[in-house]
Length: 541
View 1: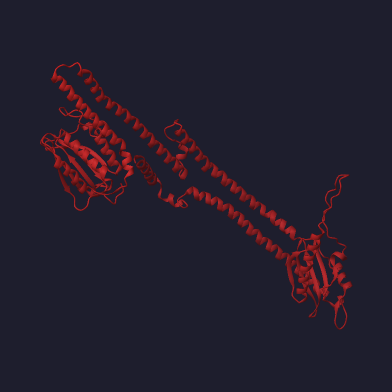
View 2 (view 1 turned 120 degrees about the vertical axis):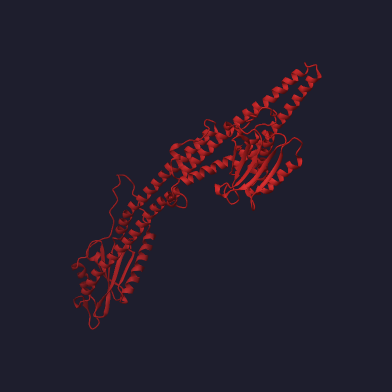
């Protein structure tokens, strides 16, 4: 419970230390998550932006190529529609010889192909034929002498490609014969992608045939597009690699270092994790490093406390055991009955002291487990005080200090906590006050509320009429095994753990306990006062 309280306190302090605007800089509460997301989005945006940009560029290039071919085709179509290139009366038709001369006289640029079809869709002129141009590709490098030739030609595939290309061309020609200009991207007989335009050749209004112009540089355009896309892809790859490197440097390696530091603690080579360069970071890794350091420091402090507690327990138990052993060794040597009775009484006193000490040690060792086991719930302090004081009032014996109660509160006085440990706080304070009170005097218990004094409005006071507490010991009385008592007080009636337990329980409930001396009008000490301040329900402990 103390560990959880310490960690929660450390988190609250760190939260209060952070600038108010820093939280707004975080994505979903995580600066590191926002950093990772930004890098990944940046790489994707670069890639998508490049793809969209190049797609628009490709579309524009193809459209421009089609417009250029369309302009050339319109010029040739007007020339072919002239009467010098037609024959027949009264129904004219294209003259194949003259049409071929047009393709010779009107230079067709390299990389383009012009074909003329008559009104029946029959090829009558081809720029490749009239210019002796043969489509082909560069020959592969020559093989060394003696190497057997390997010719693998998929005739079926070539036939299928040519058939598909002819079918697409036929559809384009038929559409143009219907009087509509066509502009498409299709496959040629060799399987290459070509930009093609087909225009009807008209004489006045009559369609005499179709002129088809195609350019086979689409593959070069697409290759250029792919080459242009490569820088974007490389930049995206570089950003992803950089993101991976940064994640490794700023996330993976620090986590590995924290893991190694935790293993050092596990192997016992260190008592706490300390990585100052990570603790200065203002992201989740820094929060984790600070939390682990706070946790291990708390555990180390707890281990030191357990070691000191074990040493104090051994010392405190050894004292009555030494006294018991001395009394037992002396008992056989004593002959007088009075002296034997005194030794027997001393043995009984030491046994009672040892029993009380062991009981208090057991209660103190189980306190953390009990506090963490029970779930906090609203506890009515007025009812709790009434029940506990009522038990003391009904069981008081002659010569013992009486206990009175003053409930100076209006309305409910509730605290979020556990009634069992809070009852132990009240009993320990009352028992301590009664043990110091003179015979015939009383212990006064009061409950009040003061909302003007900060977050701890509920005040429980236990006053006695004893000799008071030395000023230098007002804080020491809450330490374990502190048993300084005034002259004449019964030895061994206290274990020195009661007030330590009180402070531990009150701190677990978010409160404070203090010790002061009550002074009279003349400034003389008239007794001690222990005050417990607790938060009321509705305030965070």
